[in-house]
Amino acid sequence: MQCIQYCDHYDALSDRASERLIQVIQDKPDATICLATGATPELTYRFFVEKIQKNHVDIRNVTFVKLDEWVGIPLHTPGTCESFLQQHIVQPLSLRPEQLIGFQSENIDEKECERVTDLIAHRGGLDLCVLGIGKNGHLGLNEPGTALEPCCHISRLDDQTRHHDMLKTAGRPVTHGITLGLKEILNAKEILLLIAGDGKQAAVEKYLTATVTTAVPASFLWLHDNTTCLLDGSRYSDR
Ligand SMILES: N[C@@H]1[C@@H](O)[C@H](O)[C@@H](COP(=O)(O)O)O[C@@H]1O
Picture 1 (cartoon, rainbow, N blue to C red):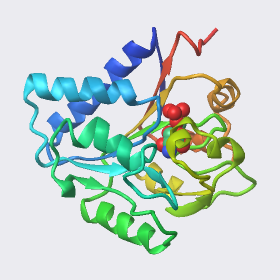
Picture 2 (cartoon, rainbow, N blue to C red; picture 1 turned 45 degrees about the horizontal axis):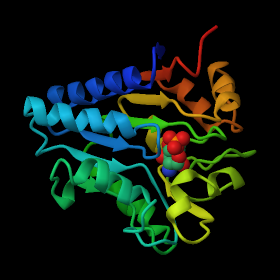
Picture 3 (cartoon, rainbow, N blue to C red; picture 1 turned 120 degrees about the horizontal axis):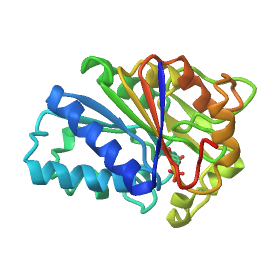
């Protein structure tokens, strides 16, 4: 079942998403939670951190997983998914290094896929996967095309993704990414898809038609039984 919820504005979406994150941890203190990066979840993560601190939620046994990463740039470079999660999650919550599973992607190395998916499997799979949708309809770095690679893989980025805002500070062109595949994403017990930000109208409209197509990787979420899609209703209306 897909549950589509229109929130009044970005703050409301972020508040609702952060509440769900907290609830998942309260229900399962050793949860494994996959996190997207980018502009969309920024406020969700800020609210999440604030609520953890305010309510003294025990996160010592939670493990976070980095959904995807740019390939070929040092991980500490501003604009990497790693830097994003370090800034928005790891540092404010003082997580131990082993509480973040993530691709080491400075060099192209397919073995990283096996290493990361083994670590996830070892923890019993993902309890929650927080996702955003790309302007081209991508999920993680599963890029649109005539066919999709099902599992974790190194992907060739399309032009739109190569110009993602995060990469403005990368200091060099990035052509590839490494990402959990649709198989690992759809294996999550629960998925939270956040839709906000400019320039996604076409992709979001296609997604909302509930037609599964490789042209919009996010549309594969219609195959998942427990997905909630929160939309910023000030930008994406149901009318
Ligand atoms: N690697 C990230 C994805 O994890 C993210 O979901 C997507 C959407 O980004 P934004 O939220 O900035 O639109 O962009 C990038 O590709």
